[in-house]
Length: 404
Image (cartoon, rainbow, N blue to C red; front, side):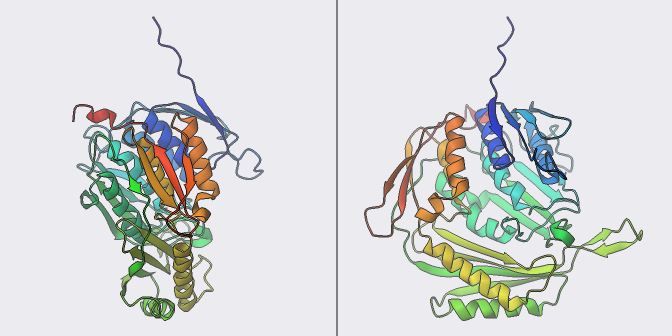
């Protein structure tokens, strides 16, 4: 008897592309995405960073198949088993997967790291991936991606709340880089080693008061420019933050710009030149972190003092939004809650964070993939206006570790 043909879940548009592919891989549901930039007269279909993510997804899974239409505006994806960097399944250099990003990539490396870390806890073996090539941008980007510093200090520690030890997650920045000309290409090198595989994430209850900010940490980075830019950014940020809190420490990181081959001249040229600032505020309540990221635009024309002030104000604005999770980390936390054990978890979110297009879209996508609807109610312990989100886990768990 032939097996019944699986029913595809249908989506349209290029928004939440990685989110939908991750949910399809975790739940095992095939998906069909159409009308991907179909109205664009110059660049219809999948963008270079989206095609690169599909290659990465193919490398860390076994048995997945994807079909892309001739114009690139339609894709069908049938997920396979998440194997990670298992020997014989794509790991080339020892126990690590090498993933090259093209020079036309306009997204930061965290565009790939965020979905990859959502898949990693459910992997059969360790998820070890090295991102290299002319398209790796480690700084924040104008398209809204986090820097690797904010990702490491504000996103990865949240995995502890789900019983996924963050001590076994390592993110190495071997070569820093900012966005190149026209916002594409950086030539950095980043290595992720995710050794915290679990059978099922724990139920999260983060619905108490977010507490008060007790310390601020940060990293000022300069690549291929004068190291004095770091001191100038730190000084202007501290001018704003010092009256509010005394425990502030911002590290300065200087790197030479990476050398890449120049096809026109035949020689080599410097890429990824720029500077930026990443700040993370830690609350007195366990697991409550707020982050801010500002980087100089690729065309330049902004002084370091402005970058420092802008980052400090952005951090204060993120804190003022309230809740226990910032807008940057909310999709990761809510997805892990939905994939966890079949119990109701609770999360406190600020009203401005809850009302964003990204969070509403995530709720709709999870519902389409078979997860339960969220329950919303006002936080009653104070007048902050925060919302308590109740999420029931689907108990998907790690298919590769059923016996563990």
